[in-house]
Length: 443
Ligand code: SAH
Ligand code: SF4
Ligand code: F3S
Image (cartoon, rainbow, N blue to C red):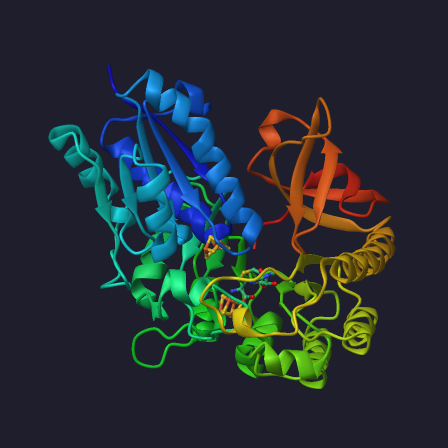
């Protein structure tokens, strides 16, 4: 009987993609992936450390597994991801959860099969953490979540050291893959039925391939691949958004008219304290350039509320910026202190109550604008890549427009993985409703 495994993934697309690679490696090893953790012989928990509640969820999950491990010592528990790159977390696991079998980090996921072999052979816990990323390991298998779309990592790590953020400490310094490796991977994916790729990096547009291939050059190279329909990327930093990349939106037909451009705050004073390296005005200028190049482009962002020292005036600058940009959607976060980051030392932390009040005001504004923007789509015809059955009901399917809007519509199983034309009949706050009117043309 082959062993079964289950992976629980917390965090961003980086972690999602790492989990796809781990699933690929274990499947190649002859293990079988199962949908329920309770049915698995091996449980893997891929952790995130971006905010405090991410840490808490991990320890909550470990608590649930303790009993199972006690009843069945053969059951293997493996933990990995961003939390494991922090010494204080490793110390806590050693002290409070000594029954965890395998601990590894973000830089050595390729070692998972070997670590599992070792724990089975030696019957003792394996801990293998690399402090920083070595040579990029190419050619690892991957088991995708969707048949029609794929995550493609193009660079790893982050050099920006925003003062609130843990990522530079958990993912190490920036390293880019060679462009020919990326093109080869995307060609293989297209051969396997993939229509849409999402290029991944903590800071994708600071991509620096061989010689002088920059991020925009890479987009042009990928735009040439026959059979590929859509190119997206996540996440770009405003400081690295070049005119060359903005021009690519007008020249590369496969590049989706959508950008996620985290602003974090609308106050130039707070942005400076966050070490974001741009001002409110410079950010708004970028938005102006993007809208000029591609007027129909959808724009989303990330905003942190209650960063240390944020005054009511600073917060109102954020509201003002949101009103000016009119985002299609935005992820909002309460500032969370992270151990070892510069902002941990800032003495002017904001009381929880004020943080929550500001958070609610901001979310109200964002949702109002999202609903207004979505209402404008009624009557338009959009190309939608059908992802699968929708969560909302029977015979309802869901997919994304070029601008990354979620659309629900009545459909059939044979549409899954296809690009269809959908007429939008209703705009809601977080999604659109529509009806299929035909197939879309190939790009
Ligand atoms: N590399 C990406 C995003 C990384 S994390 C970028 O630079 O845009 C995703 C989002 O989490 C960030 O954009 C930020 O808004 C939020 N975030 C990061 N650290 C945080 C913290 N300590 N507290 C609250 N939100 C945080
Ligand atoms: Fe974190 Fe800033 Fe790097 Fe994004 S750019 S991962 S927010 S340090
Ligand atoms: Fe979390 Fe690590 Fe991503 S901290 S957000 S999983 S890079």
